Image (cartoon, rainbow, N blue to C red; front, side, top):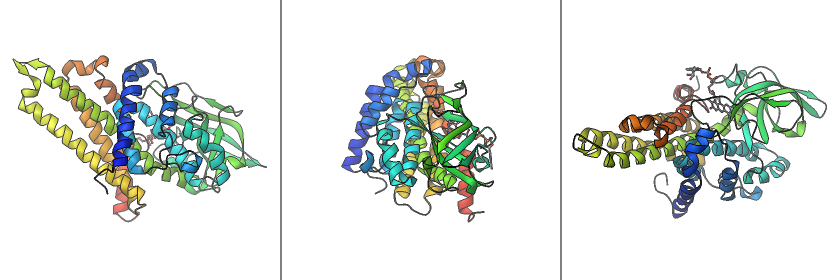
Length: 380
Ligand SMILES: Cc1cc2nc3c(=O)[nH]c(=O)nc-3n(C[C@H](O)[C@H](O)[C@H](O)COP(=O)(O)OP(=O)(O)OC[C@H]3O[C@@H](n4cnc5c(N)ncnc54)[C@H](O)[C@@H]3O)c2cc1C
């Protein structure tokens, strides 16, 4: 069942579309301009199950599939890709706790994460290690029943506003096998944040450094065994990449929808812009690109649901293809709006600015090619 949607899935998509239309889209430009992080809106989305989409139901999750998640994030992305993408990051951190935490950890953290009474950030990147994430240097040194963390994470979405930080830190030797996943609560002495970065898009969520200066947390905050953290972080990114792609797809669909309306209204040379066949062909290509992206995204999501051996490769392919297609379509939409596309009030330039980072984060699109090529060439 890769291509058809069940009745339940159609209903889930409608619920998310309604939510995006009513609670996100009308505010998207204002939140972008004011750099407002809409916590109340996140909590309203959480009340509908969208903060814990693939989390198991015994701790308050929705117990849905990756295909369902792709429908939800595409719908939310139509309202605002930035808001949708932060929900995706919160879902990613929560999923790692659900998948790899002990029963005690699941019961301690997940009920409030599913309601977004607790908001989570995912802390992998450092100034000296982005694509080469396994070279991270933040250290967690064991001291009795505690770890003492020292180091700095860079580019952390939600930092400062979030309540819980899922931190990949070095507890052992160099390389991926020396990394552990440790939860750090806001308010822990030694935890502090850098300034909110000034950036091209994604203005409705803060991006800040997260600093650990002799930050002491109990050993019971570690997920799994020492040395398993990098594996958990990468496993989470398979689904995370699908969600980031889905948010971009929604943003691009919104840009296309606005362009269809605009070209039927705007006139030049005595006719509607939509009467020029050259522009009709551009619209046809944009719509086709998004349909192809959508079909492939759902295919990759179905592979992850089925735990197919090629799922990681397909998720990387989907992230690369969908985010590139989405950015291209949004940029085309801007071009077809002429000068008005460049004005903030039309909403198109915001979508272009927001979608640009989807090609960079959760693994750049070059790193997606590294993953795909490695799979093709047998793990080289
Ligand atoms: C707005 C924003 C939010 C973010 N949120 C988070 C977050 O919440 N949590 C988090 O942990 N991180 C986050 N990130 C970090 C993001 O994941 C990294 O920026 C990204 O992984 C790239 O790392 P880098 O910036 O260090 O670039 P680099 O790794 O320095 O890469 C620079 C360039 O070199 C290319 N490159 C590197 N290695 C190779 C290779 N082997 N082959 C070919 N090309 C290569 C890259 O593709 C890129 O084009 C965020 C980033 C941004 C901009």
